[in-house]
View: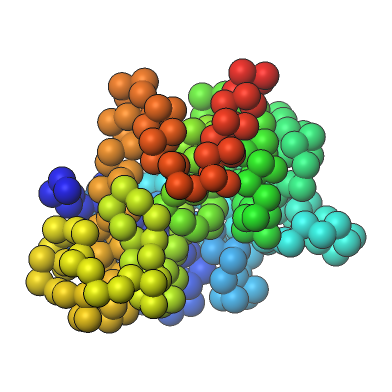
Length: 297
């Protein structure tokens, strides 16, 4: 395995930080100094957290400016997309927040508009509307978690968004699983975010380098198939401690993402995924579908 490298970007939740750490960030003169991190800080608008209930879009974007975020997304209201009127109104409020953030930003940060939609047509129209009435550097697509078992539908939405945004940045909120991340990139995403490596660690799932995760009860008493800085010091019996496992999963994910960048740059990404998804029939079929979608758009 290649040597682990520190990430070039970290993502934070604006509403949680504003609720709990605002004075400490001010004392440190910004988020970069608080984190001891001199690279890109990506500030999520915070719509998925309970703290967002007490914050408006105006308050959130002002806080994102105050802390010195490099990239920001707008305050959104995730939905299950089961079509009741209440949830459709949340989709509309998310779009209005994006337009308000666009007016307030004035090119201070790179700004991504949060968008939720149930169908490709809704997504295409939402992006078209925001492009006409706002100023955005890209878009962040949410509410895909409820459709996680419908991978073909997710691919269609992302491919549609990719075409609608052109060369602007396309971010995907919240989907978990290293193998699924890679498919999102092939479908057209530029970046993704998730706590998947933490959730997997909590469920005692070990990310196998270049393979699928294995639960502790299915692992057996094998030697660890990894030489990261955690696995070098641990054994099968000790690595499944949650904090250690989370760090291992994070390192494994970062290494695979570095490999993905190389494969995309070389033009061999599809062939790499063909090999990567051997033994994962659902994702292998989804990859073939994504390829057909690319050709039709």
